[in-house]
Length: 372
Image (cartoon, rainbow, N blue to C red; front, top):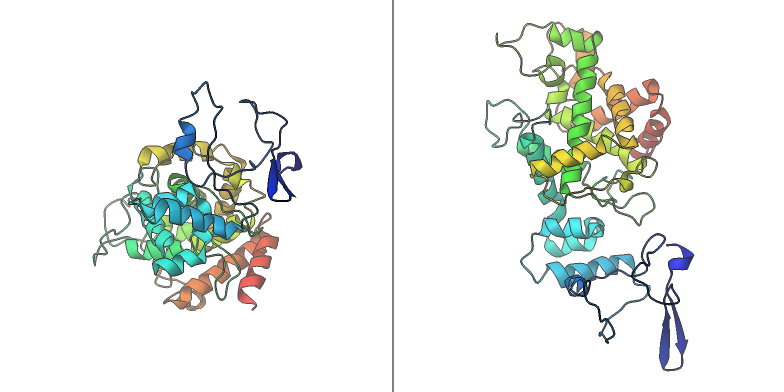
């Protein structure tokens, strides 16, 4: 908060005097940066006075001065959400700080924000026409149906972008679910913005893979597939031998995307991107508009570069026909639950060796996460 916007309280015996950041009130007054007051309850009553010509009356106010940031979140939740029938997911858009409060997780007994939001984002990835995963997620978890299951997508999003800021074995937080590096701010994106960011990131990865005309990608395109029908997507991106289209691949990409974006949040000015519509992630119009605005940001260029670097990784599975035996053995480590950690490590090592922009950060993350 800028010094000229700060409020001061001076005690004079039994009376305390509140000094506001202006000599006299004007309707045109605006704070330089962060406003000095935050209204936790009663916003609609204040809005009712916007068109009033007579504002000379007394209003009772319960105010807290210097209240700890977690207590601010607690008051908002107990006053506005807990006693009322309000969609909890909406609360996390209205007051993003709630996303990082561990007391809320303990009080509710389950991951209120993380599970709900992960499901909403997964639905958007499946339902939005611009998503590479449009109609390609196994929403019902049916056997024999192509596509990573909805359950696996939800678990991967919860374990990456919406994970808590403190977690055993990892010092990186989730871009959507924790305080950023300064330990104070939570990225205030709403559901549509979060969905748009992931759709954009996956779309850029798909484009980068399609642009590869040699190496592992061309090898997968040359394989005769079990069906004679023309593939719905590039075999190198969504084919049966592409790790990208597997549970491990989804988790691996989301982990490295979160790692890079989380540490670059301030540099990329992610907090400066605001949505014009406040709506749910499943609202395609709101997501479409968010996509259009994000594409114009500098952060979009950074995501494109990241996607191009990650696309160069050898994404072939261990079951790829005619795969060199040495390569096949290296890829067997991606199978099972241990494959999540191994793929994340190898993706970071790939960035460390081959990326101009993300090499140093990949080294930092690798040392921070794996050398404990």
